Image (cartoon, rainbow, N blue to C red; front, top):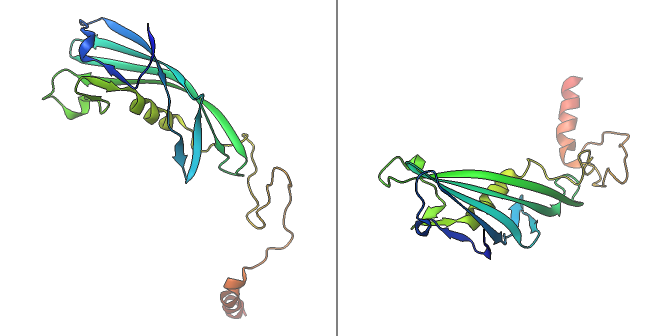
Length: 176
């Protein structure tokens, strides 16, 4: 298993027979991901990745494994947040080019497996719904904007936004 810097694996050059597999260690560098306008940096800068190509009777099965971290702002309080994601993905590419479109992998073109694109997409799919600094993050106060993790508090009165004052007067007149 050779370790090399690459974003593509030549499937055509492997010359595998049905039932045989090829394992390759690749080092990837992935661009930062963007969620909700915020940038999340992928760490480490170079990610050791294992790619397995297995020849089946009707096509090729690809497997991708790696672990990577993401660092960026917490989605509740904007403090720094980090998480580690493990990716273990599979793809299938049918040998028959005229076959069903669903049996073709979007990551295989001209006999080349685009490992970098596949890894980036799989990392994005592995991200949880919310990236948090901690599981019990309280977020920001919707009234004053203070970080509720640092300054837990409640506001005594439920103040009406001055922009809604005219509607509030109409509502109170209707209740009378």
